[in-house]
Image (tube, rainbow, N blue to C red):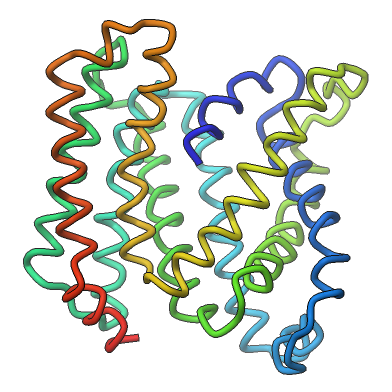
Length: 288
């Protein structure tokens, strides 16, 4: 997931972010489809069974639509705000997820809440001390806050409605309905005529984004949600700024040794232990 923030920056000279996202989702779906039909599965877990059920179809349209809405919100926000602002606001996703889980009736302990607050503060500390620029409110920040809420809704909804199937099957369903949203949107507003289809570097970037930051990441997320719960996946997102900062430190080693990075990373580590405690996981499982 962290590498997605880094590698996606290299694709903008070759295609619009919306076109690149639509293409990586479509390619991931094409790769997953033969594996999906090859894997043994119970009849009730088949895609046909989902499509025959109005309730399941609507649930997966919401799950995938929330994810697609996050990407569209991100692209729209970056027109009027900075990447620093979006990076800082991204750290609110776990806390927003915890609020949504409470709205769905899942109890959250005080230690759990404190862990989310400490984690957000630590991740913001890492970002502020390893990125240049100042934080000012822009119109795009409001758009991105809504996008982050949609991402949190996606994670919570997957656990609530999609936790009864295997990781690969769940990821395939999300990819299928995600493409159902993205393909028409990309055809209309993806600026496909401006895509550098002939550039080899563009395809290397798309292949990486497809295999690792889309296909592999989605499957791993399903594994975590199924066996560890949504809270664990939300907590892991606090480490994204740290991995990005480590990559940047390869070019500017002094940043990794700053007090802000060390203190912020320590706060994130403490938050992971607080959120990932056995008591919290048992509480989440009992409420599921």
